[in-house]
Amino acid sequence: MALTPETVEVDFITPRHLAGGGDPAWITVPLHRACGWSHGNDPLMPRVLLSSPDQKALLRLEPEPDGQWWTLHHAAEPDRPAWYASFGARTPVELIAAVTDALTDPASTASAPSDPHEPLRQTGWSPYGDDGLVSPDKAAYVELLGTPDDPGACFVTVTLGLHQKVWQARFGAHTPARLVAAFTAALADPKPVLRMDSVRSFPTCDPNAVTRRTTDVLAVLVAGALEERVHSLCARHATPPASPNPSRQPPSKNSRSR
Image (cartoon, rainbow, N blue to C red; front, side):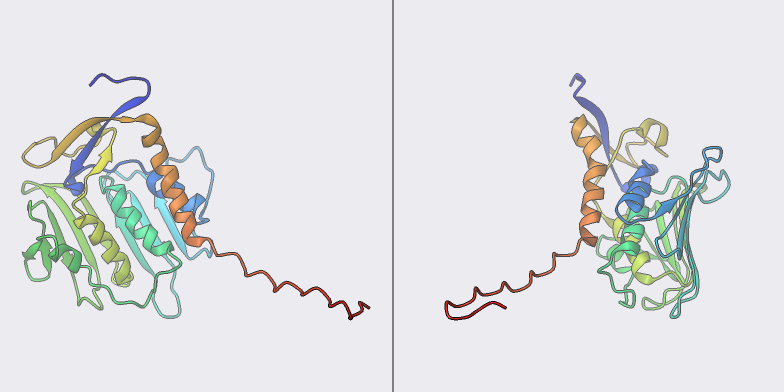
């Protein structure tokens, strides 16, 4: 199909763990505009720093050739020590966004137990080693150190072949289980993800490893996806208007106003 000024060529890719990183704005823009996270302005530094309104959480995006590009630190609270989560450069933004969305959801219950393994078991992941699960394509491995109610540290590693690591996600021992479960649920989601720079960001174009469906999409729909996401997250914080005060009854004909 020939491109027109009104359409753009995009790829829909599965499995999502081999789709490449995607657009960081999918995470940073909603955190700032929908969740009130503030950011510094240092144009001379190739990094982004976002801090939560209560100053307890800090998200750092910084190019690190030999390390994790995304790092989320959270300060200690009365019921939980400080914790962290970090993600490699090619970790799909949809998976990281699942964590930040769960963290900033005002309706979530921090104490609710969650089993990070459950979304994976439900989509055909099989046991791997002593404490892990492996994806059906054998490319993604989840190692959970602990129990479902107290999982401890968790590592998610995606590889190609035996030695080529694509990305890794790391969750510290005190990371809330519900956040790890949000990540694994997004990881297990069979829906394809959209990429516009797949030639550059793909860890592989091997048709035996990924399914890539290229199509033309209206540019306005692609451009509006982020705005729609921001609007959806803003709605979580919207409070219903207060009930109006009961209206005063008009005085009876025999009553007198003072």
